[in-house]
Length: 206
Image (cartoon, rainbow, N blue to C red; front, side, top):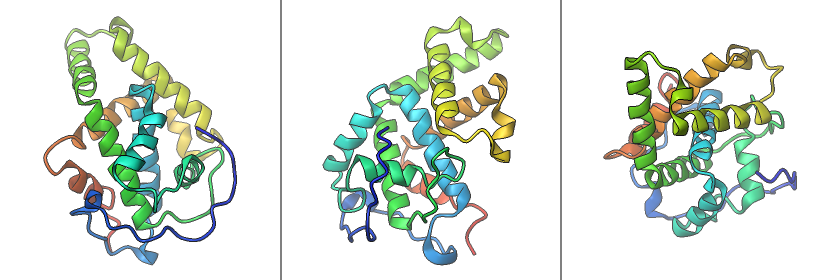
């Protein structure tokens, strides 16, 4: 991801896009995405990047196809939005608006649908490995996914944050990577985008 810290001034322009259909604004303080939502969105995108080596380029393509440029202007702006995750090394102390959160959800679902087959194969492999009491190293694609996810996580998250401490072991980080696989598969189902959006605010709605 480009780490140019050029400032993006102002708030996103209004966008009228079919992409946001059914994504209802939750009743949250300040009408911005809460901390847990920002973390979860960024980590889901990390998982998708570990699955799809061309994820960043596909996101840029998705911005155009889905007419989301009024919300996410370019690669630098996307980097800034990802860094509203407070656990990142270069965390940005700026809010993530509901509109920006919706755009990230749309992009996550866009990427997940492109990789539905791979995601299903990985989850099936996980079930088979557990049934045979085998480690991930016995399945090439699973081992590759977990290795890439760990690399992304350790290079982008701030290891000094207390919330990162539970993931310093390979086993716990692998468990996180696998749980995120289930969440990104959730994106690919019927009304998956709407259900994902709602799930990101469970317990947060006033």
